[in-house]
Structure formats: structure tokens, C-alpha cells
Image (cartoon, rainbow, N blue to C red; front, side, top):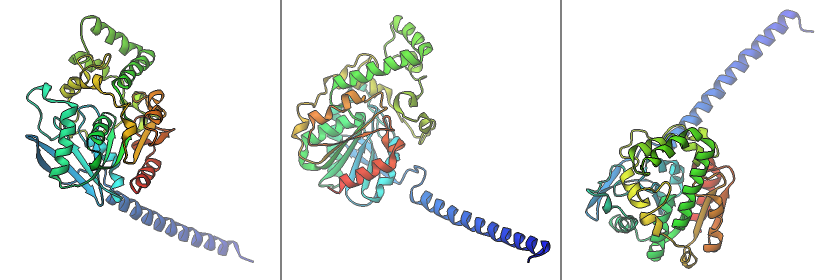
Length: 336
């Protein structure tokens, strides 16, 4: 039998061994974490390059290997910075990030009237040629889906795969975005809505600075997220010209947060989507209050050949809220 002393020594010895093993486990866990961080830095911008496109300098960044996947950001008017949530896909393709005309580090227009959906489509094609890509894959998110769809319809011979990410197929669908967003704000942020109605009664439209300020008091995560906690910080708060509001209101109209106008009001590809021959992936979020599910599911009718994925625990950004599932689907899709 063990004496009390020998039992104590045995216990101390086992305790020391346990502490050593815990320290080793922590060390190896730390190594694994550091390797993961090293593989996918916290959205550090890779080295980029300007291309002279249609008379303007457009900023581009590329990361990864394999076939190019051009990512077109939302807004309209958003720079590419927020799209770096897609960085993990660089293990299976070359991600091409672009600040389109008027956004981010790229040149801006002297007059807002120079901005148009047509210009974005033309710039994408000119950029493909300048970067010497024969065929490209395209992922258009939100507003970017409009450019992506129109480009694929105009230049189908240049597109290998098309991804419509939380997108829109018509101005009518965008108007539903406005109507639903305003309904949610009125019901859930009555104090904001009251002030908004007051400035509107005084003649302010969506593009008025005070109207923009009040509208912006509604947290991004309220309308765009399943889990708002994932959107409390910005990917790169210091990135220049992250959102060009002059461009935004040029394309959606002077009162575009209530009644759409401009290029967006004229946009409609519902009768054309069935003609797309390349593989098409459409993604949507159950909790998306912007690209709303009641319209998003209609892609099944207008583009029946597409693969449609509704993410049950996401809002407008499945790449943030369900990244593992989303990126697995995209990788499989791009191998088709």
C-alpha cells in the first residue's frame, strides 16, 4: 500500500506532467493558429496595380492561383475593401479585386453623370483584355450582381462561371429592397423614422446630407445580418473612398432610398437570364432584408438552369455568416 507521503508525491508528479502536457498543447495550438493567420492575414491588402481603363486609373489587387475570379462589390459606389471576406477562396482560384471607376483608390469623375452601369460593364471588359485573361469567372455581390449579369449576357464567350451573390434581377426587385427596408426601420426604429419623416416633409430627398445622416443611424447589421455581432467592426476603416455617395445617388436616383430612379430603375434581366449557357450559381440569405427572399427565390423561375442556394443563417453576406458552407459550394461550383 502507498503511504500518504508516496501518494502525495505521486499526485504532485502527475500534476507536473499534466501542466507540462497542457503547456505543450497550448504551444502547438498557438503554432496552428499562427499558421492559419499567416495563411489568411486579417484582410491585409496584397500588392496592387493600376490599369488605365477607358481613360481612368483603376486599382486592382490579385491573390491566389488558378483561373481568375473577378469580384464586383456592391453599393453602388462601394470600394472593393469589404470583399476581402472572400480571401479564403484564394486556395482554389486567383481572386481579382477591383476598385471600379469612382471607388476606392481609382480615379473619380469630374461630374456624377459620368457614372453608369454601362461604364462598369465596359470597364470590366477592358480590364479583362488589359490583364490578358481569355475567360474569367465573375462573382457580383448585391449591386455588383447587376454588372455581372449584364456582362455575362453581353459577353457570354468570355465567362466561364457566373455567381450572383445576394443580387437583383430588376429595378422592381430593388424597389422592394427600399420598401422592405423602410418598413423595418419604421417598425423597429420609430425615433429615427420620425426624424426622417420630418426632414422629408421639409423637402429633403435621400441624397440630402441630413437625410443620409439620419438614415445612417440604423446599424448595418439590422437590415443586413442574421447575427449583427459579426458586423460591428469594419474590415478596413481607413481604406479611402469606401463609399461614393455621389455615384450611389446617380445610379439609384436622387430619392433612391424611397423611390428608385436612374439606371437601376431601368434595369431588368428577367426575360434574358434563361439564355445564359455558362454555369450559374445564385446565393441568397434567409435573413436578407435588402435582397429579400420573396424576390430572390424567383431566380428559380427566371434562371431555371442555375444552382440556387438559400443560406438559412445569413443575411446579405453568407461569406461572413456561413463562410465554410458557402466557400465549399463555390469551390465545387468553379470545378464544374
